[in-house]
Length: 392
Ligand SMILES: *Cc1c(COP(=O)(O)O)cnc(C)c1O
Image (cartoon, rainbow, N blue to C red; front, side):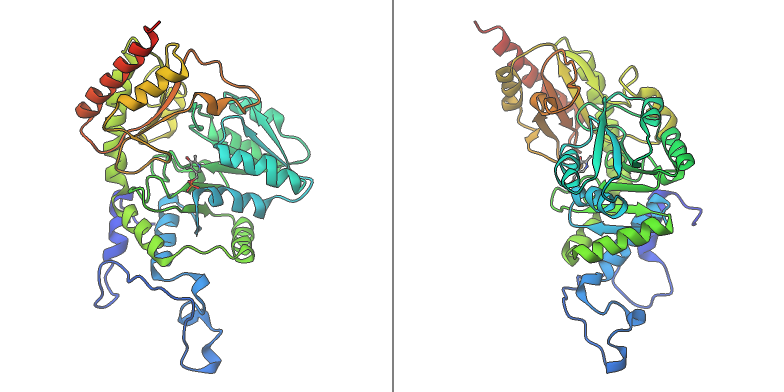
């Protein structure tokens, strides 16, 4: 492994010498068919891929850079972040197996477990969102095949001692997997903490510009790698060369965008925490917030996605807050250059143990705008929230 930092390696992989005259960035190779010169070479992939499904140069370079970033032996790309969660689950579980996870798992991942996997005979247990490592480890039983973590978790941002869970899994012959989208493969390195499979929605910070859907799967264990490669081949998943090219472009500047957005995120979280309308900011980098100790111990940076629990309020007041903003886009997803806001109060209702919230739940993604402009915008939003509540 190169002695350089992530920030340097993500760029120096593009400028490595000894490759002849070439553009800095790979060409976009749109191809289903690859031609060979001799019949005997048609099936020989020593000369490069024999068919478009294998992926072109941009996909290969993206996979290599992702594996390097995650400290993995190999990385795969799939057409969405959700597929990065579902493919390893399909590859690594069999009917009769059980998956252990928590209530705060990303909603569509949860739906895959409770609909598709359940129909396939793979059962799932959803522990309380704030289950600690001890609770998760104690839940491992004879049928448990895999523990699926997300830390911080979706919407309520609970953290878990990933290393303790991964270690206990290894001791028991159980696989561990994490959705590391918040850490982006950058601020947290799951494989170095003993996790078997680290996945992330490249849609978010890696692509970084809200114009690509893609997932990344990083894995070191050779049996897991084989199983995941086979499943991708069996299912016929493919990522377009244009999308691979865009994600590779995003990856070059990931550390800079991530650090800047994390800085702004903390400024805004501190400002919100001091506001009279706000009960709690759910943001592990914020001192006093849920998960702060584990974040301090394990993470080297912060994403800019957080939850905000308001003091009381109604659905109409929450909507008035969103409607009053002009800089925060109203839309799903996150990790792009732009600030986004969503109203999430009702998205926790499907949980086995719905959280007790003091008021409306808002989710903020802080983009690359000037944080003082974003604060002025949020001030208008909170004034609109208050105005609705004082109406008769
Ligand atoms: C967005 C997201 C995904 C899914 O990514 P898509 O590309 O939208 O399918 C998975 N996990 C987490 C935690 C996410 O936030």
